[in-house]
Image 1: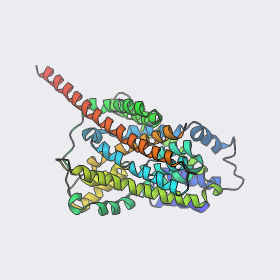
Image 2: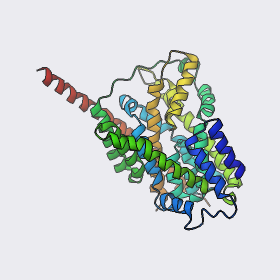
Image 3: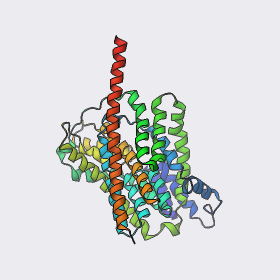
Image 4: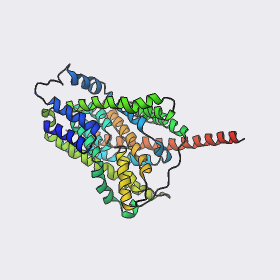
Length: 350
Length: 49
């Protein structure tokens, strides 16, 4: 486990793979596996952090969502709302992997926690897994963050395989300007609709949208800056350490962990492919064609997945800029994954 | 032993639920954008008038 912990820290430092999370996770993993360190014994430091902020009350992931909301511009999504469908399609990978996990012998709760890795959203994975299968928390979270960091390696081959050169060259219309009224109204509208339909998604969607309201309303700049910086940074430290601390060798070093990593990769590939294929399908009916590459950005991983779509598009046509268009499905993916987590909780916790 | 009936229910209701939620949200955004742009035009006309 020391080797795995040090490997994560090395990857974070040398390769810049999700360093904000992999450094504290790797360190937590290291320190918890020092004999007699006892940090996860009841009443001790990391146990207290973990027990009260994740295991018992599950408050850290929603707090992270306040920061994500404050950093997210939903403008591209409001300007082109049909990209919400691409965010929804990308959730297909989550549900396919749910089935794959059942076939490999996991139970319903564990399968849901593994499937959600395909949403490529770390805080949502933590939120769901801690409620449904907390014994898998370490493995699912490390898988989710590892694959999020590997988006530039995993997605391009799938993108090239499922699209033609001509499709990758499609230029999209410039997005219209979105008014301030629309940007302020969006978080209120999204909260009302999603929380009414899926009340269990409220902790994530509600916090995501309140963070976004801070950003867009323009009168609480201090709150917005705090959410984007101090709040998310402090929460990230505790979140990373706690997750690392859930991985003592006897829990992590099992064949089950390898299955989770494999299924996580499958989930990611399915999510990418389903977004791409829906974009191609939509093109059969649309007058203004969309570049199918933006469908791959329907996995959350904001903004990495959108950047990958841009990079792949520019390899075919150096003057084809689809980054802003790809941000639409990208942020829609965040909403979709949080909604999927809420639905899993609704259906599996009775 | 996996309860496949429940598994299929989770799949169809879950995935269907996500799609339905986002389709409804999409429709509401389109309606809201139209109302918002209508309001702005009315405001501009008042200012010009």
